[in-house]
Amino acid sequence: METNNMTDIKVFRYDPEKDEKPRYATYKVPLEGTVLDALRYIYEEHDASLSFRFGCSGPTFERCGACAVKVNGEPALGCKKMLKEQMTVEPHHKFVILKDLAVDFDRENVRTGEWGAPSTEIVVDPEKCTACRDCVLICPVKVLEVKKVDGKGRAVATDPGSCCGQTCAQCATFCPNGAIRLQIRGETR
Ligand code: SF4
Ligand code: SF4
Ligand code: FES
Image (cartoon, rainbow, N blue to C red; front, side, top):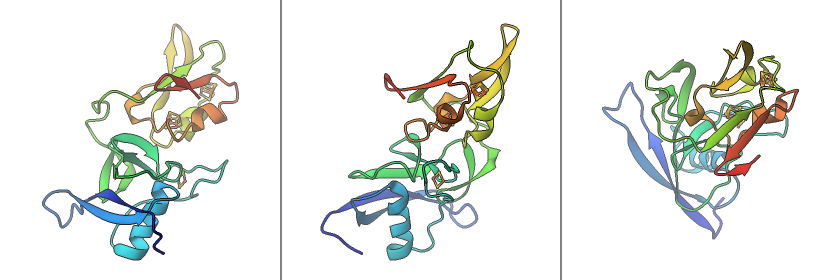
């Protein structure tokens, strides 16, 4: 369905089994909804060979994290990130690429942790954290671990550069003790 309000979106394309190297393809999509909506539009209207993941499509309490990608260089959940003009979508850098935007969440890239300054700071209150690991389990991109700090177990952000905090916030939402604050470019969420 075309509307008058269309925009270009640049999408990373790479099939490791066929392509010598990755490339970027540009598609026209309606300037509305989320990045995931745009990917589904591309799949339905332009190119059904585009691979990407999604699961829950982002209902309020059931974010599966399957749609984690990078939008304009920053980790984000595609089903929450609102589409804007001229965006670039790439696979999440932390995981091995299966094809295009689809990654293997069970296989991490060896270069994890070297991906530039994180856009989200994850602040864990040591007084409130009970080391229950809920946040560790819920984080779609494996940013958190429970470690011993000053003799007491607590959640630690071991890889904040991979955090989709600008759209995700699962850890802060589901921590039973309200121990996590996310700071995204100086703004607390
Ligand atoms: S969910 Fe909250 S209390 Fe549990 S480990 Fe994470 S920060 Fe600590
Ligand atoms: S906001 Fe929390 S749950 Fe979401 S990616 Fe970042 S650390 Fe993981
Ligand atoms: S599709 Fe489940 S979080 Fe985006």
